[in-house]
Image (cartoon, rainbow, N blue to C red; front, side):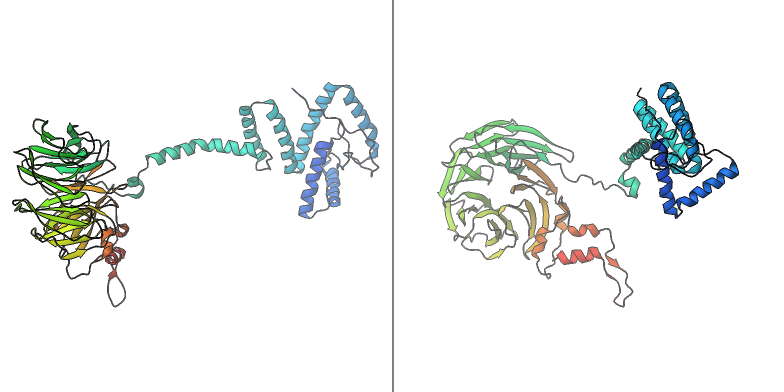
Length: 561
């Protein structure tokens, strides 16, 4: 243990006035004495009291109390009074000769100085105790130092503390348990307990989304059972069974070597048709899960579109603009015609099965007579490609969606030139699905599924959406309650569109293009005015006009038709 050496100042004292004060044994210590004197001078200067007045008070206190106090210490650390110089030197030499006596005298003198300075000033007491704390910190370990500091804090009673870091550390340790308890309480807190609200839990009203391992380009619902088939970019045709709780794979066919582009069922659902980029078409027995026929060279170019016309007839279209009609009993094509240079994007027929219409990406549509097996008429060429088709108004009008986002409307059977058009959203239309006599769903390249009403022409709103890719295909289940959509992200999403059948359109209200961004009930996204939906639609007013529209009413009116 390293001891601090306290050696008194034995220099000759300066001349001073006579004083009856005695110098303590061991001499005057400049370290504590000067520091105490400086603190006293600072306090006196602040309080506006001169040193002379302090000396006078000290002398008077000595005469009255009769106590022996230490003399006033000057900067050189020598007390006033020349009569005691000999005693200072004697004490000094005695302490130098004997180290043990020096340490004992120093300890005794230091403790005596603590008692005297405590009576004179609280500041001197804090400084001396701080020096003691520094020695204890060097000698003891961290835990003992913290305990000593706690004892000193109780003893000081609000005096100045030099070692603020130790004090702050002890304070943080004492509050650590309370902080941990607060964090544990915060983890257990819920929105219901904090704000008294009920959780917004919606019951499932549609089958859950299903994510496949590869992109899906085609879908088809089974006409009799809760099954849906998908065409994948891996060349597989997969059959899923769906319910409100889950979507499960029940069958998988891997007979195509290249991406499978479309799938379709016949009327009774016992047969599944598949087409592929490898120019082949296959007929699959669903009950036996076996391939009945595989036409490996059905077209010279990759097949893109398919349509089941009847139990024995079907039609296909390829990337070179060729359309073929197949007789499955004969297991061969009975009609083929090259109607353009672009891809045959879609095929459609009506209930009478008299005409077959094909849309082409070169900007035209072509009408064929199925019974006579000939081309009836081909339309003029438009600036944008024709991608998808649907029948409305009792199958009297043909709606064709284009690459520029415009709907061209033709009279069924008269495919030469359109009779009406409706546009607004500058996004490519990939697919069109009829829901009711005048209600149609369209899948756009921006990933939105929009509902449109024709006659009058109105945007109803957004039914659903895919985030990263455009909509490749839309299909409706046999009850008409659900629709399914697919995209290149490999996600099959189901939407409950039962509410759309009761949607009413006001023919007198002007159409508003902003409705194309309006989110309907089935959408996973919300409208911006839904923030105010819990507020009253009308608020009371003191003005003569009466009640005024609330925030929810104002926001809805600004975005309505």
